[in-house]
Image 1: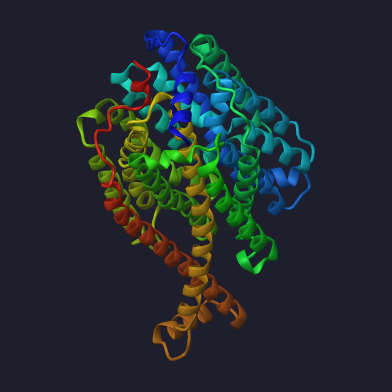
Image 2 (image 1 turned 90 degrees about the vertical axis):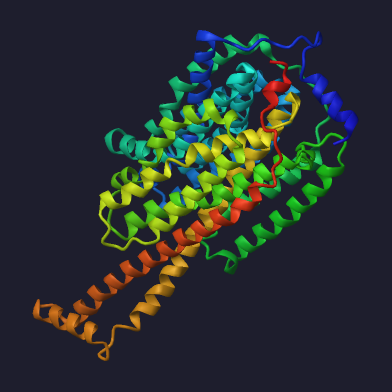
Length: 528
């Protein structure tokens, strides 16, 4: 982006008289925080709440569970495309107007999804729900920062980070409970009262604080490359595992289209006069370091959160609800400590806070890698609880780091772009970790099978015991195969946790390339 255009955009984001808006205080600020936090919570929640309901949805709409996963893929695909566009949309239509419209579209298509009577109707609803709500998360942070006094912006970041982190953890639990006790359409209907109230409160409090709009021409080439590239990439990541990855011509074609489109997108956006994505943000050292740390940190963190409940359900025989309850304690300390970290983080070097978070993540990941298939519920819950210590020290300071030093006009773009990479980190993590877990499980199964032969005294003794218990030859082999399967997939999950622990340690030096001071976020640049 040119210097002249930077100046143009910055001027467009401030009122004509250049008088800075005063921050909100008291009840209006509390109401705005609740409204924005809840709308963000519902949007992020909808990424995971459907996961546990897929079998019910598939049965109700008479499709296979594999086809039912389209309800997940379509939402994340549309949301991923819209997130990097946030800054451009907000500049064109105004931040407040864009946020409120986004919330209302989310509510409208939530209702549409609940009323769906067949799979194409649900997939269309989820696509539109994801597209409508794409800018919501990034703009919620922008609106909070612009409304809080500068000395309390840490609290705004804490509130925002808390909702974004806790929602995916509680999504499966809430989804399971609603589906079991009511019916699957209610996972969509619950968005309506929350969304409508959030839209009314936000518009009432902020419509007079609207940012000035800039009617720049539409970058059609950039838009087409973005939709094609990100769409193909997200679809490939969501469905690759089911199609045996690049052995499938479909996945291979999608991967090649994504690679070509995204490469051309980067080149085009760097030279476009009015780019649809502001890649010039990566010239800012702190933004680049913050986004890399956030994306790779999310890759490891999300991988643990995906594989852990999957292992519990498929290998240890947990129900969806109990697997959710085993995963949930990670949110307890995150919820309690977020406001404290937000209030006090200006007193500490933010790189130290994030380093502490990575060390706690690494230690708890290693702790998980030591468990065997006999681990009790209580044993599994303790490291999940301890892991919660790291969450506020990871998300909140990293948001402050990548926003530090940016002018007000670039906050929406920066937030949208970083959210896109955070979502991409989660998507890549899900695809890679599940595939890796399955492949390592098969490898461990093959290795363990070698020990089941007459030359091994332990194996012979065990087979004799089964024989005395009345097991036939086929039954004995079937029973032993079950045990080998369970232990193989448990060793595989240990490998995943161990790998994540190493990744968290490797990320530590990356973080220290960020350069202080980190205090001046975009809210400060707004003249608050």
